[in-house]
Amino acid sequence: MSKIWDAVIIGGGAAGLFCAGVAGQLGKKVLVIDHAEVLGEKIRISGGGRCNFTNLHSSPAHFLSRNPHFVKSALARYPSKEFISLVQSYRIEYHEKHQGQLFCDESAQQIIEMLFAECVKGRVKIRNPVQVESIHHDADVWALHTTAGVEKTQSVVMATGGLPVPAIGASAYSLDIARQFELNVIEPRPALVPLSFTAEHFSHLNGLAGLSLPVRISSGSKGSRYGACRFQEDLLLTHKGLSGPAVLQASSYWVEGEEIHIDWLGAIEVGSSFHCDDLFNHEDNRLKLTETILASVLPQRLAKAFAEQKNLLGRKWAEVSKKDRLALKELITNWSVKPAGTLGWKKAEVMLGGVDTKELDGQTMMSRKHPGLYFIGECVDVTGHLGGHNFQWAWSSGFACAQAL
Image (tube, rainbow, N blue to C red):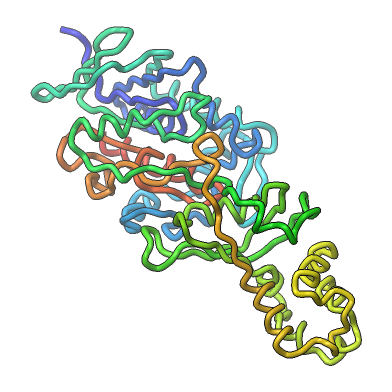
């Protein structure tokens, strides 16, 4: 009789390898299958090659899903502090960046090697490059027909990720399998992705490419799929419009045809005694030029561009009418622009949408309709904010699944 695995995990990325290591160390006979020549490519290129492997503050509030409560169980059972402890046990040096983001000091390769080492501890078998050609369920056993033969298993774990970065082998295979077994799939779209803009919106910002500053950005609406958001992040002005972490965060909530809103002074107000009204009403500013006042809180080139847009360049503040002052304040604190679209899957960091969480048990990641069929990581309709949260979902969902196998 041919060998029957306790679990075959399809996908050797972050979620798949971590789940395999945990399950193997719990005594399960685990096989990982992946079509790629080299495993962990998305880990390797993440965080500029240093892998933003988690976030100190990762919580359910940092995730988008049609069911925002779905992530709670997995995150509670395997929070970021647990993965940090694992990283420390391998003596991987790391550092904190903006808002709790943790990166390797040396290389993302250290995280990949750690995951492989965990699989070795669990006696996990890894086969690649191997293609899965079909999956069938017969009686109590799953049969996987692959380019290397037939594998039989008690459980199948789908961990093939999402559609971003097709150049490194991204595919919709997990979604195809979900549909094969009549599970609902939330239509995927790119997330944490640069937005594209038409030139007409930026005629007054010509010459500002390369300028970066923290802003408060708002996107989405109460009636949209994931509601509205507001982030304090860095914005980068480019030759094509806007980029940087602020735009990536906003992209996950943005709805085609809607505007995004930017408060260029919002980030300054946070954690300080400054308030924008003080800037516009302070008596000492009466005899100063408008652009000089704005340059006290904004980069000089940007201050000049805003003053010029409202025809206030070279005018003293005392000469500016109340109406024009209010118009300038509105321009700076509620600047709006309508994106033309996104830059697509090639530039996206993650996927929005995926296997509907209503189809899965939040404690085990198993299909409610098909016992023994699991979905973990990015292929599930759970998408994290920028800053290590998506990796944390890979670890947490993989852990929850491994405990249930």
